[in-house]
Amino acid sequence: MALSDTTEIRQFSCLDDNFGVLIHDSESGTTIAFDVPDAGAYERVLETTGWKLTHILVTHHHWDHVQGLGELKEKTGANVIGPERSRQKIAELDRTVEDGDGVLCGPYEIWAISTPGHTLDQISWHIASIGVAHTGDTLFSLGCGRVFEGDKEMMWSSLAKLMQKLPDDTVIYCGHEYTEANARFALTIEPENADLKARAEEVAGLRARGEATLPTTMKLEKATNPFLRAGEASVAAALGMEGKAAVEVFTEIRTRKDNA
Image 1 (cartoon, rainbow, N blue to C red):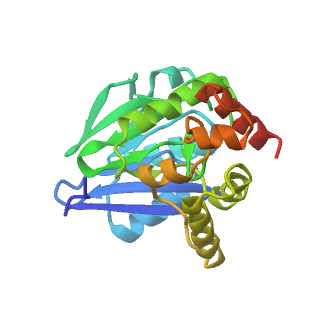
Image 2: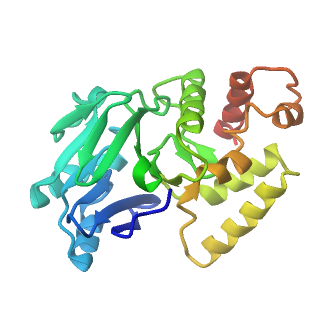
């Protein structure tokens, strides 16, 4: 699904390696922020574009995703929507959602996909009408989030859910610029994966020029991201785990990444 003629998306750096993301509809004036790592970074983009922030969608409660939330909400009056499981942790929430809930932000119907593992409250957001998703700290380009509050089985289930629910042409934004380091690790798992080698070269070039490696697509991640490929027989074989369940292969890959 292609972006509509009235949709514009801005991605920009926040803090050390976080991303800020704004989606704007020129016809309705709707402007949606995903997480607020740093209020000032959002305010600068809003001032430059002249956009008025109407909604803030939160993926999870970690400080580097919400520390600017209170300031930005106060300055803009934006409506804040986040996971029900964040209710006791994020004071600024105006509305909460559970898995499968839809919210209407201007012309955009946005679906909440519960993707716990990194945290128990983690929500990924999917705007099917324009083929865009924000996966917070669940799915990164060539990687996935470290498992803090859930367990590895939970994280694998969340990644499998994203692969099932997000079409291949979905454009994916996420919380961090980790792709170059993720590429180096991915190559230790699948050194002969031609798609991965090509992506790693592309990423190295982008970072050398100081450019972002995001957004990515679900199709590209399925072809190159070792965490999504835990169900592939070739990946199991590369790890000496032929015949093992995908969740076992994923657990091994995540453990190796944790210890890398």
